Image 1 (cartoon, rainbow, N blue to C red):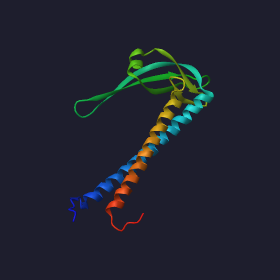
Image 2 (spheres, rainbow, N blue to C red):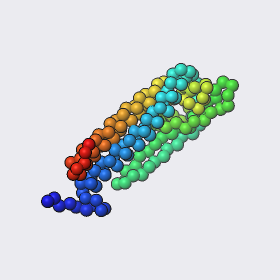
Image 3 (cartoon, one colour):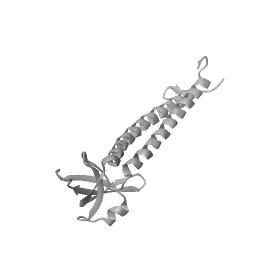
Image 4 (cartoon, rainbow, N blue to C red):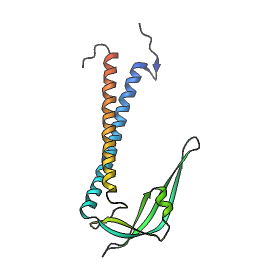
Length: 169
């Protein structure tokens, strides 16, 4: 006879199955979230590819955010506040996340060429194809998470079938 360990009222085998099932649900939710982000970035990328227009933007402010993590590590994020005025429209200000190198290379008052969509002036990109590339990357992340969720669900079901006597697939 097998000895079972009780974990929160469950046998250890059952707790392991529940953990795999929870992992499948979490990965499925993550895949859905990342897929929604990729759809949004893809829409912006297609819009910019169809009607993107180059315009000169001015750096009106710079900002950094530092997040402190455990074990005395931190991560810094760099932002440029850009301003541009599309022809016949009001001035647009956007906050753009940038690399540290680009952040350090730019000063307040510097000018740079960006692309924006005239039909939706807040939709912009610093480099041509940036939004489309981001959408492709996020789509592949969503596929990976969905495959992980499927694998976790299959593994949980397989373990469950081995543990629960009389269970029919």
